Amino acid sequence: MPSTLTQLVDALLGAYSLILLGKAIVSWFPVNPHNPIVRFLDRLTEPVLTQVRKKVPPLAGMDLSVVLVLIVISILRNMIWSF
Image (tube, rainbow, N blue to C red):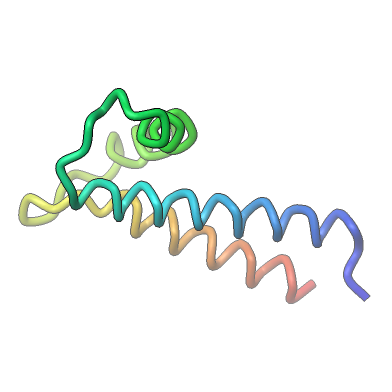
């Protein structure tokens, strides 16, 4: 039986994954950077994505930071449920 803490961490990681997906989708369209939704997504994701971008340069001009963070989150979620 998973603990409440395990469920909470998994839910938070899942929510952050959805926020990252929202950020990725919004980045495909010309949007106003002052839009409240865009600002909300930036405030929540840029601190993490900036750290990843410092370590992993763009590959063929593509920013893979969102993909890498989603992969790490997926691995963490799998590790949480395997214990």
